[in-house]
Amino acid sequence: MIEHRLIERMISLMDHEIQRMDKGGAADVHFIDTAVDFIQTYADACHHGKEEDILFRDLQEKDLSDNDERVMQELIEEHIWARKTTGQLVDARERYAEGDKDAVDEIIELMGSLVRFYPRHIQKEDKDFFKASMAYFPQEEQDAMLQEEYEFDRRFIHEHYERVVEGIESRS
Ligand SMILES: [Fe+2]
Ligand SMILES: [Fe+2]
Image (cartoon, rainbow, N blue to C red; front, side):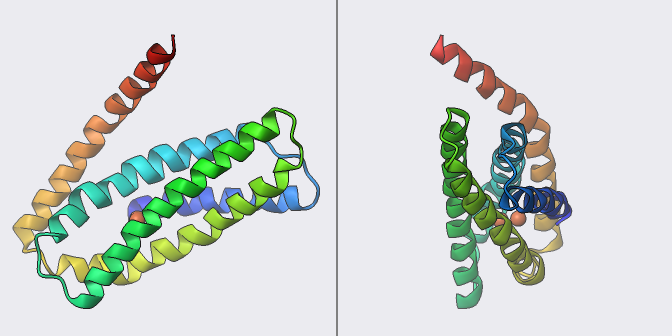
């Protein structure tokens, strides 16, 4: 939930950027790159990564109520949608940077979709799902999950930049 607060701050910056473009401002490719990096690295890989690889994984071992099972499936689908939409934003940004100025409308549309999506997704997790899901775990299991999350974070930056270097190496 602490991580959700930082995601909300980036979403608010993206909302301001949309309003600026809506008034006829040019797309700021540098801002888009920063926002996309934040979403892909922090929100999708690190934050959603921990939800999927630790919390949802452990919940799959539990006998969830029908409602909790349904909400978890929705959250998983929403993560997939968010990754796909961010990928489409990257495509639109590429076309814009290559000179297709009409791509600004697509950038506004896709950034708007993400700005509308994240607060709803976060609210579903904060208000409904996280508290309900903790009831399935005794305290020792909650503590073990938290330790695993710390370990995930500890490894994350190293693995991230290994992938960055490997990505460049594979192209050369
Ligand atoms: Fe999530
Ligand atoms: Fe989340």
